[in-house]
Image (cartoon, rainbow, N blue to C red; front, side):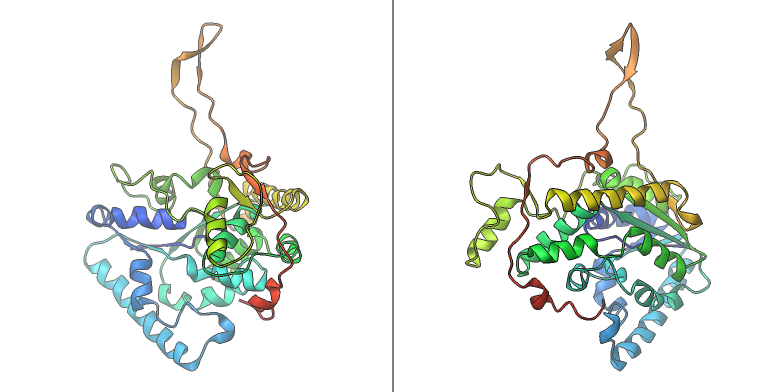
Length: 342
């Protein structure tokens, strides 16, 4: 039986993909694919396994040993039941948003986290999926989500930390490849694949993906400026921006210089992936297939395909309806405890 791991990353439409799997779980099971989403993985199945490495206790280790055995038993049971695939979608296997922000790094100590799961899949051929996203949008989305949970607004210095932190998607991919050297790793860009959970599923599973529901589902969107200002007002804090703002305007805490640096780094990642990623991963470009010819689009009497915008290219230009804000000096590093590693 094939085992597939969808590792996220966070804020790369992972929640939407999991909702898609959950909605179609019965249909997929009839076609031979069992899917485990957080409704299953966070219900005691992985007790003791998803832990910050520096905080692992002896009890966590005991629970993790039992969890590894439980997962192996479940995989064998599914195999005996005639299932030919198991897809596990759990983004916290590689870390959490709060850990990333606390350490101002992109999934540090990833090897240590994933190594705890290696025994559960011993002797199995793995297919691993990872969605990545342009850095300024990724960090802005994480911060937006965490501010809603009580995090202080980011300071100028902290945004500089995130801009210059050394870990990039290339390092994340290398860590995954090192931990699972025999696995097939597939990477796709959020900007082109976020609204296509069926294409993400097709990248990991060779089975029948036709006729499934929820292709247009989109969950866990970032808060817009109005929503964030409502939250800050309830907390008695100053709004993140003043003056008239458009409804649904996106919050972008990074300034133009920081965005330029982050986008250049992301372009470097995409180029590295497109060039083969040193054999570590297969890049799923996600470019849309040419549209069907339309009678309404003609040049010199010849029918031409409709031109659609490329969202991955859009991220490299200025973001429409974004509200840039460098943040306030409020000691976010002290509040998050930047010492240590995730």
